Image 1 (cartoon, rainbow, N blue to C red):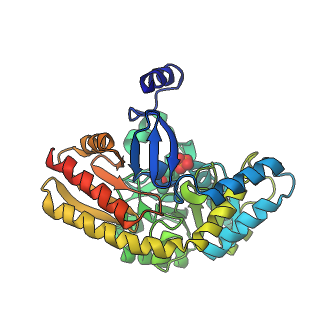
Image 2: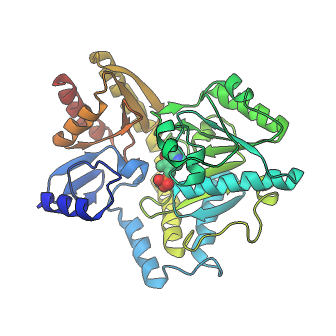
Image 3: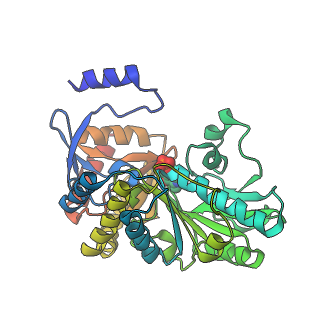
Amino acid sequence: MMKDYIQQTEQVLLHTYDRFPIVLERGEGVYLYDLNGKRYLDFAAGIAVFALGYGNEAYNNALKEQIDKIIHTSNLYYNTMAAEAAGKLIKASGMDKVFFTNSGTEAVEGAIKAAKKYAYLKDGSANHEIIAMKNSFHGRSLGALSVTGNEKYQEPFRPLMEGVKFAAFNDLQSVEAQITEKTCAIILETIQGEGGIHPASKDFLEGINLIAREKDILLIFDEIQCGMGRTGEMFAWQNYGIVPDVMTCAKALGCGVPVGAFVLNEKTAQGSLRVGDHGTTYGGNPLVCAAVSKVFDLYEEKQLLKHVRNVSGYLEKQLDCIVKKFECIAMRRGKGLMQGLVIQGKKAGDVSQRLLEEGVIVVIAGTDVLRFVPPLIIEKEHVDEMIDKLERCLSRL
Ligand SMILES: *Cc1c(COP(=O)(O)O)cnc(C)c1O
């Protein structure tokens, strides 16, 4: 029966993904079930989305209640949920203004527009430059793709947005070399996700912060994957004590409903986008905002950040044992519940395939990194179960 659905899907959906050959039907906690009832331990969380795990009753009920009240109003009117959700995002970040989007890539688009407008209002010219990082990922729409430092993703779609310069991540001199009079923003992931789980170094962020303050260049931190508690702080930059001017969020922000946001500090909010500069029909509608609001409540209720700090220490320790034990594993990188194992010999795909057969879901990052981004509610016993099966797969490799 799974085969039928797979065949049917391939007939009607554009083939832009090589999907794993399973049809998922439902989830419970940190486990997913396919159509045959086979159970999978989920260390992918729908790519760092389902932080609260599947079937959280309070979350589900908040959505059901909101569906019965109102799902959508457009942004021409006020609604209670947008104010509530944005208020909680402001409080968690200490930043000042929120614009809700429908996805991560749209949050990046908005952040880019805010930076361009800020520079435009400052000097009246319209040829500003943005510095982005090599090996980065910011999304698939054309603006976000323009700042995504991956030749393979960019090439077929040129010409892209002008004025983007690339620097090497964690190399301050390389960033300095790209700065000109026209630089309006530096965009980076606090922890590079798709590029293979590379955390920014403290020196690098501090150096960039100094340059940005001195020259009034806006710092845009893409927290779409590493944010929302994944590192043990609500936002990864909070581990460094460096505050961006603009931050992008999505993925776990709504824990499964399509919502993203770009969040601005007062300076950027006051000096950039105004009425008519930006908009969205769905963005921040009552349904997704009910989800966002409930997500923040549940993080607090479950003391999820503290839990992440506890359980991720254990995960790191167990992964480090794997690194020692198996020669094909070069190293571990990551922070909190965003971890990667570098697998030598282009075997990452094989390992994830075998793990799936064993009933564990993981995804690849870059070309050779096995990525672990589980729901934030995982417990030590789930780490043990995953490690057990991972060992079995690796020893058969
Ligand atoms: C996933 C991701 C995006 C894109 O988000 P979408 O919701 O897929 O558009 C952008 N930046 C980072 C860091 C991401 O991980």
